[in-house]
Length: 243
Image (tube, rainbow, N blue to C red; front, side, top):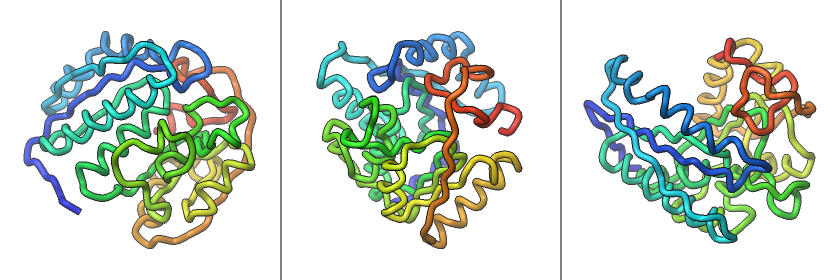
């Protein structure tokens, strides 16, 4: 792996106002709200160089998601290669396929991944009850599923260096995709309720030791409550106070 280290990295905020993978509109408007809050100004106030750019989102079509994911992968790779630190602001979670493939391209191999999410997001078309792409990025990053998401240039994730923390809601068929390949999941009740940081430390240890196994427990969805920008929330999911 090529280690790309800058002594004074710029945080490159990349906005992606997309809902192509979501079941309904709304999440794409998060970008407008955050833009008004001025993330670069906040980052600069805390001593970090920062800049803001927004991706051009194509008109809705059957090819639009794949086009956007490739563009996002290119933008993310360019940020890494320039010595910057990309901060991707969406948009629905299908965008994860583009930004992590781009990071892999820039580094020369797939990075280890720690994902904090109440949903496993490891469906393929054949297992998804809804067909929504925002429930498929982890499977796609592992090289499984829809070609529009799988065929983004870049290395597939190493499942033994992939950890999902806070898993609370999933369909049984999802577990077979990442769990069967060596990913590990830490369920919400055991780790997030004792603070996210402890789960991350265990996730880092898993990535280093390349241990196998998974543990998941399902829960039902709830109203958006304290996170109105979340399109598919979960009963008992992580509250801001746990961050």
